[in-house]
Image (tube, rainbow, N blue to C red):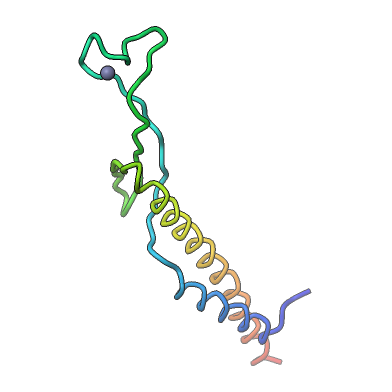
Length: 113
Ligand SMILES: [Zn+2]
């Protein structure tokens, strides 16, 4: 069943309130890396190797350009939270657009009615 204008407006207002309350935003995805070093006697040359790491790397794309950034282990939790905020933002904006398109249509139908 189609939502009423009132229902659409109410849902959009809730989205706006949540958007305002979102914390820091960070786009991208986090990956873990293990490295070997230049020291031939290091544990990373053992069999099986015990490589260095994990090192956390954030990959992201902004305005068509991709970038990467190393993230300290101590910052991984906060970065994950920032990434979660960003994906929440994207979902909320997408939902807002969907509802807004319906709302525009309902208003026009109402004018014609
Ligand atoms: Zn090593």
